[in-house]
Image (cartoon, rainbow, N blue to C red; front, side, top):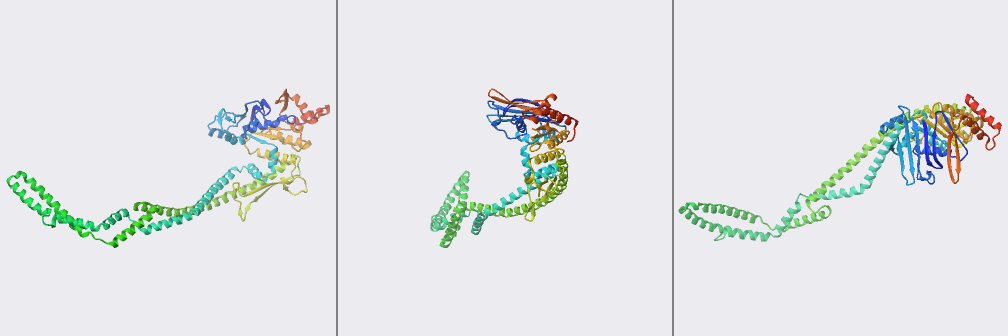
Length: 563
């Protein structure tokens, strides 16, 4: 329930404090006095868009503060607890808008966000104004009203979640297919590269080894001659090193016999001879292996030329080209895995589609049951609002996309409200036949029914009396009064037939002092209500007859008399 509303420097309001009461609160006043500005201020604390134009001329900041009571155990209290915001019996919401563009929000003196206000607002206050009359003409809004009446939001949420998961999977599949299609030409090129590398049969370090072999083949003659000369000097020629070592060995043997302490010299010589004999053997073997082969040299040159050409595309050396080949094989494997992933996504889509049809089917069945109940309830409510013979129907149909049910986040149903205001008329869409007064009463009927299911404790009606008067207006007043037995109702009206049923009547006035205009509001005493009703009845000229009529309206309303 909205207990207090404080407004500073908002539009033409300088400073305003209002204390609302339980039951039916009525606000009346001349046209342009600022009644709808109050609704704008309340919208601000419910999370509506803020702008600098809202700030009173000459002021740096506009602010609105509301004090509301929150029932224990309510969803609002639970949300506040999850946000770790202290929530006693009262909830204080404050919002300030400055000319610097700064927008501050406080909930129970703790900094909050506009998004948090928007999450709380449906649980606190429901505002119905002229724009909602027009929303009734929009078929797209009818489904939401039906779901709200039937309390079907949990089922709707389940359908939305499945649809959302399906939509994400569908986008994932589209991305996967696009990537595959876009990469098809690239994969063909990579496949060609892999085939080229595999056909080359490159071995690790092959380029280095072939490079060394080429040098040997190119210099075979020189290597053969050098090894033969070395072998001759070491072993085969007259006076070779090994031959002379034999002579030196004799001399050292003679020394060691005379001077045994020099036997080590002989040992060194023996070791040197062994090494030189091994060197001689190796030189002989090496010299015998050297073969000058023009055919082999040509083959090596050709192989190195191939590796050189491949190296320019795939890497500077054999090892780098082998690494690139392995990389290409991995990419080919990923292409295969991509196909498997595509199949998995398609299976997931089929499963989500099945789950959607099941959940949407359950929701559609509940909506069908709810639509019949809503039609009956609205007709009963309209009868109380002087539309006794009106027929109201909630037309529910399964929307189709070709032969398949519509796949949408709200389910596969389409709803349209149909009305026959007079006997003998066919049921037709509201947009085609409903007058302003009929729309006002249908809106009130729907709000009255929906209020039984919602959390909002405060219902605000901004000129819901559009297009009605006389007997119908008084019936609307009685309807609002009954609604106020369950909820706090705040109604802005120009009709005395509605205002007379209020428990609290506030007068909104616009006053000018010098060059400054401001709006004020005060609750009327019982003795003042009759005069205000007379003004609403008679306009500029208020006669005693008009006053008597106003007094009669008050008396009849206090007795709760039906029209």
